[in-house]
Each structure stands twice: as structure tokens, then as C-alpha cells.
Amino acid sequence: MKSKIILALAISLGSLSACESDSIDIEFNGVGDIYVRCQKIENETKYAPVVYAYSNMRMSEAKIYHSDEESNALLLEKVNENATTFNFLPKSEDFTTADNIVNGIYNFRLTSTDGEILELSDKLLEERIDPLEISSFGYNQDENKIDAEWGTVENRDAYHVKIATKIDGQIVYSSGRLNDNSITITPESQGWNRNYTMKSGTTYTLSVSAYKFEDSKTQNGYHINQESVDYRTLEW
Image 1 (cartoon, rainbow, N blue to C red):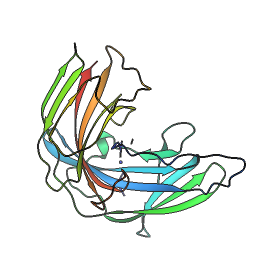
Image 2 (cartoon, one colour):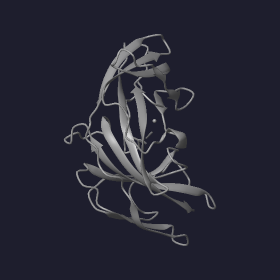
Image 3 (cartoon, rainbow, N blue to C red):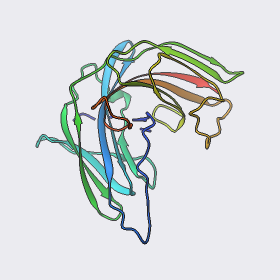
Image 4 (cartoon, one colour):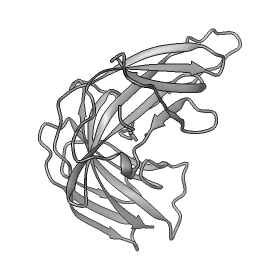
């Protein structure tokens, strides 16, 4: 596999709650997810893989490899110091104009800080959706009001809008799932991270994503097959 959080992922991915107790023996559990990110870059449609591994315990290592016996393992990176989430997020050089990301079954090997091993798998399906493009974007700095519209992406399962400190950074606003092609966000809107204080003069990144899941009936934010995304920046 070529060298690809929130499924941000952030489509309100939720979390596996880390539960530690002296009196309860907690079973090491988790989720692995690999999906394709698609976006227009300099007017070209480009693709890159994104990988997330989540667990209910702190991990010392997480890696992924394709079920093909000749596949090399890819080590994922900690999201924070006491990480229950590891990921691989694409840099500009990871995007290619050809969608040559190998489909099929991918295996995850998660290692807890206590040395427990958890083996998981996730499938990447052939189905793809077109890139999403933001058609209109406006930001009223006096009112901190944001308006965005985007074109229809056929065969998507949901749209999602978020505001983060940077691309794939800390999420400060999350819309949840949307079916409409437009949104208006104000300081009174539902979805803000009330534990984060917006900073005047700071630049934030707004993203609009169309998601296709492995199973269109899924109700959680795991097991994404593709994310088509477009970005805008705003200075608060």
C-alpha cells in the first residue's frame, strides 16, 4: 500500500470509551478503518489513503497491512501522548491522480501499553464517489457567521461539515450528518466544541465532506469507504 482523523475522520466519529478500573477486567477492544480521500487539487482529482485505529485502551503501537502476503506493514502515528487513537493522514505527496489504492481486506495489529495484541480487519471496496466542490462560501467576521454551499455528490451516504484548527486538526465544530447542500453556522449553532474557545485573529479550516460507507445503513462514523472533501479557510 502506498503511503493516508475525528473519519476527522471527522464525521462525528464518536469514540470507544477508555474505561480503567481496578475491580473490572476490561477486554482490549478496538476498530480499524481505511478509506480513500478524494479532492480537487489544482483542478485535478486526486486520491490518497487515510487510516485510523481506535481502541478502548492506551496503545503503544498500531500497524496495518494488506491481506496480500507480499504487503508491507505501515506503522500508524499516535494522535496524542496517551493515545487510544493512531492514524495515517496523507501529505500532499501522498495524493495521486490515479486511484491506485489497492482494494480488499486490510489487517490491523494493535498493541496496548500492557502488551496485549488485538487483530482486526477492514475492507476497502471498489465503489467510489465523485469529488465534492464548495460552490459558495462566505464569512461575516463581525457576526462570526458562516454560509457554505456545495454541489451534489451522487450516491453519497451523508454530507458533513466541520471546522478545525487545521486540516485534520482539532475539531471545534461538527455538524453531524447532513442531507442538504448548504449550511449556515453561527455562534449559537449546535455542534460547537464548548470546551474550546475560538481565538480572534486565528485562521481555521472549514471542510465539507461527502461520505460513502462500506454499508450505507451504518449509523456510526466507522467503516468509511471514501471521503470526498473540499476546504476553505477563515480568520475568526
